[in-house]
Length: 275
Image (cartoon, rainbow, N blue to C red; front, side):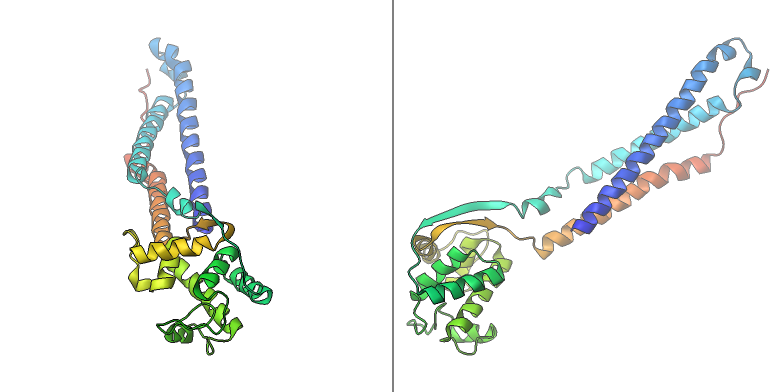
């Protein structure tokens, strides 16, 4: 992301310098022609610098071509919104709760350690554990979920948890699972819903079912303090941004190359006849 961003910035700086040089060339040439106008009016063209008018015409034509290419470049990218890739990392919202963590100190400390390891808000992970098992390592739900994070046996095995009733293994697997869900959905409310009902039960962009809303509210009622929600950059967003950068590179190259190529094919400057 940063590499492509800096490359695009460098390419735009190069193009800006090139455009500046073309403008300077045109104005210098125009100034010289203005100075020599009286000599042309007096038919004293022998005093004109050789090729001055032709050079001004050539510079004007090159400037015109460059302006057309810049207009084409702007037209192609004006609807692109690269800022979306950066807005994806901005704060989505702040969630506060008035609950209280009531788990054993050693288990809470262990949960905080796992939350830090996977980049999860500690108070949110504590609220999930409190909601799921009330900090009972031997808890088993009616549907067979086990341990502190109430993981189903198959899910626990997939996460590398061989003993769901071992607090450290269960908290490690639960935190890892929460992180996987966050990478998948990029929204903590969807993460909570998916943690409770499974990833397949949630459709991003669709209204959450009542059971999901109830569970989210339950977790937030156990939340102690405040956490900030951020949306991660997805692989799809990054790929789209890289394609946009490559397209901009191409447009910048064409803006620099096309006027130069056309001018080379047109030939030399126009000369004034000598009298």
